[in-house]
Amino acid sequence: MAKKKVLIPVDLEHESSYVKALPSAVDQARIMDGEVWLMTVVPHMVSGIDWRYAIRGEEHGSIKFDIQDLVKQAEDRLQQLAKEHVPSELFGGIIAAHGTIYEKIVDAANEIEAEIIVMAAHRPSLSDFLLGPNTARVARHARCSVQIVRN
Image (tube, rainbow, N blue to C red; front, side, top):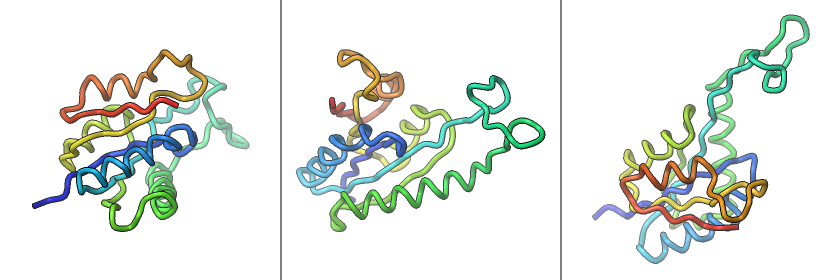
C-alpha cells in the first residue's frame, strides 16, 4: 500500500512560510505513517512593466530571467531544507514548479495524490485575521484536506 502524502508548500524567501508549518507536516506524516513532500513555486516574473518590479540591466533595461536556473536553485534549497527539517524516513520528495502559485500547489497535490496540504496562513505583513491570497485559494480549490497553520 502506498504511503499517504503530506504536501507542504513553502516560500523559500520567507521563513514564516515553514517555521511552524513544516513541523506540523512532519507530525501529520508520522500520524498517518506517510511521507512529507516539500514544494515551492517560482512565480511568473514580468520585468520591464514598472521600474518597481523590474531588475534593471546595465545598458538596455530589464534582465531576462533563466527560469530553469531559478527552478534548479529552488530544488537545491528545498533539498537542503528537507535535510535539515524532515527525518529521512519521512521524506517523500521535492517539487519545484514555475507559474501561478496556488494553481501549481493544487496541481502538485493532485499529481502526487496528497492526503493533506499543510501550509502557513500568511506572511507576517498581513493582519492576523487574514489568510494570504494563495493560502485561501488553495483551501478553496484543493481536492484534499488543507491544514492552515497560523504563525
